[in-house]
Length: 289
Image 1 (cartoon, helix red, strand yellow):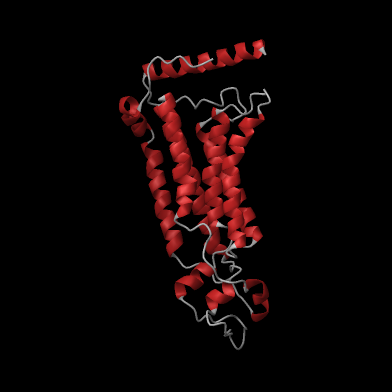
Image 2 (tube, rainbow, N blue to C red):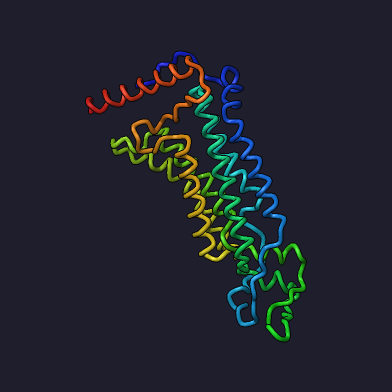
């Protein structure tokens, strides 16, 4: 049963109101951006790498299949574009705002967690030898046998950031959030057995998985790095999604949480009315089936 709209809640009519209500959330996002920049600037922990440890760290140094500039496109812009398409269909600024805010929180929190662990762990990448010794001639400390790198400082620095995979965690944070968002919108758990809906939900996860596989194929990460990155991204995406939306399997999974704080009486009535119509429609449909 389609929702009967009393009046569209658009960016023009309610955008300023909802932006003021969530002003502190957007400020926290800016803080997360600053923290992320700092974590990428500081020097990571340089773990001891002895001569005998280089056997598993001598894979060839090659370019990324998925370049770093493509990660924000896949993890942020692509989900955001789909969210905007849904907004132009339903004309609900609350849904769009909550989805975009949740998506950005998912990616940025994941980024901060990932880079903080990267800097603290300092695990060498599989191609560390060629980052450390681009001429192929190893130089080691005469006492400790630790590597004495002769390569470019920025390349060596990046070589100490293997665990966990940032490409993977960002991809699963953004596309994992999108998968949850789509599962709620298409009502994938409505118990009607439409497997095609699952395919829609699994598609973003497949793209994220392919990004993860490329990191191992390019010898930029060990498999443990990719596994941990995927786990971090999916976990954070789940928490951020549930902060703004009901669980996808809930009868209200297609809807968003009612923004009662600082909302006008007209807005609350409109949202409650649409919630009632949807629940009533689902109940009638279940009796018909």
